Length: 179
Image (cartoon, rainbow, N blue to C red; front, side, top):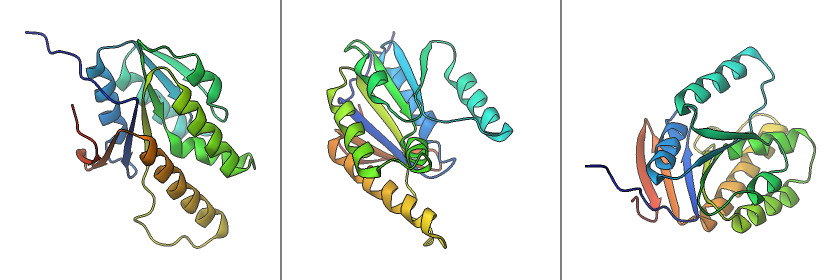
């Protein structure tokens, strides 16, 4: 007997630390939705390690994804999505790093992202790092990033109908209900 597709809210947020299993969990939600899948990639491959990580993620997902690379302005990629598909935005943390390093206004960029997410016609699963559990960074740029990531995650969580934190590969629902 074939399993029925799961129904997700318009926006799902999957949080976790580095290598927590958050991307794999988010991908599984997208597979379970039973819809055409679009992957919006925010990572930029500046070195061999990142190129390898991107390659590994592509292999994990398989070939049944439309992949869109969007490093700064996510609005156009999100505005082109349709109600019959599901989008995996991986990840908000790398997007925020790109915005910070491009010296763009963080609040303006976050507001534009939230507007684009709300206006998107597809279901969206957003992956983001939880960076607030560590020590206080020793330099101003790192503290600025940590604070901005915390604000972004709070805004994403407020808009999301489902928020799941993944720790050691185990999902914990913080808001909403897993289908």
